[in-house]
Amino acid sequence: MIYPKILIVGQSFNKKSGGGVTISNLFTGWPKDKLAVASNSNLYNDLDTSVCDTYYQLGYNNKLHPFPFNIILPKIKCGIIPIVTATDTPDKVEPVKSGNYKILHRVLTALLHFFGLYNVFYKLKITPEFALWLNEYKPDVIYTQLASLELIKFTDDIHEALKKPVAIHMMDDWPLTINKPGILYRYWQNVIDKAFRKLVNKSTVLMSIGEAMTDEYKLRYNKNFIPFHNPIDINYWKPKAVKDYNIKDKFIILYAGRIGFGIEKSIADIANAVNEIAKTNKNIIFEIQTGEQEELNKLVEQNEFVKWVKPIAYSALPAKFSTVDLLLLPQDFDENSVKFLKYSFPTKVSEYMISGTPILVYGDERTGLTKYALKDKWGYVVTENNNTALCRAITELYNNMALRSELAAKAQQIAIDSEDAVTVRDNFRKSFLFV
Image 1 (cartoon, rainbow, N blue to C red):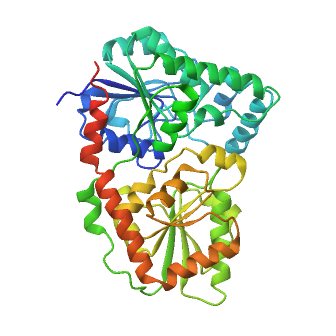
Image 2: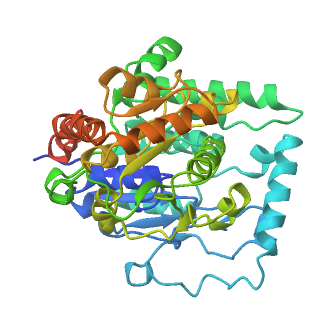
Image 3: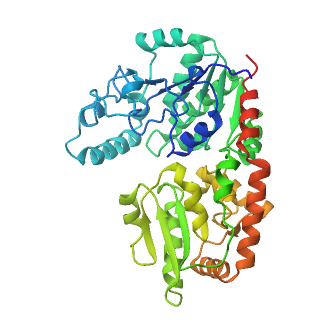
């Protein structure tokens, strides 16, 4: 098989973020000497070398953070990361003595966005050292998941320097959502739109996260985007799949993932619904598996029916997903959240589907995920943003084992037919064979 040499700009391989999991699964099997990552995220944080072991730490003026953030955030030198220390805490990182820097970082970031200065400070440039490394690596294709103005412009600069094809893979509708409210909002929105369209017009391969985004981007940008989302290794996931739908000791609802914009209100809604049901049914538990415990504590009050669960290794997820009774896909209903999530396709969807556990989709009917679940009937869908509808849905799923089994079987079959990593990875590889 032919494998072009890929430079991945921005997103690193990992087993925690949606973008990281997606590229890890899409690029699995690619020769390691033909993959390299250049990222301005902290690469020493949860670095995964199972798929790729060549990483270049990008930064601003050869520092990870620009002024004034470099004063308060950990000091990390930029450049190629030696693989022998990639998974350890390097000497280049100065330990942070206090957690106050996180508060200062949030405040400074909010102020810079408000005054329209964020994109002034955050500007990546091709340093002489990075240019030398690029010429030594000699990629065939520049692949990127764009999620900021700086990465849009930086990818364009790399393209101009190397004269190599660009492959854009959109995870969310970032062009409309990366700009934050502020006094120069309209100005920066226009800048982002023009920069994105400029890079799209130069790109050779355009990828989306799903069919809904592909359809929208055809209308918006008059370009054809190929949908690729997180594939699954059927042979790895299916042996752990659920076979018995009888309720054991407790009926466990699980949400596994991030806590934040676009989903936090709906998670709180589920918690409230479970607490309401628990007044008459003590046999139900809502587990929230996330690394963002602090954010979760702000949303819900934990009790015997609503519990935080520590994150587990990615390799343990098949067993975890198959041992609970209901999996949750939450989406917030406010306009900003719908705008952000409208064309998204969460990484966990295909993993939930193959698990054999029924899925509850709670979200606005305008989002692509909700439309997909309604169209193909692979999940129980609640499109009403109220406690009564949620309680009714959870109660029906609790009482109806046949319904749970039917939904799970439908979802699993779709996953087997459409999400098999063997087929998806080969189609993904072939999309780069223009070089």
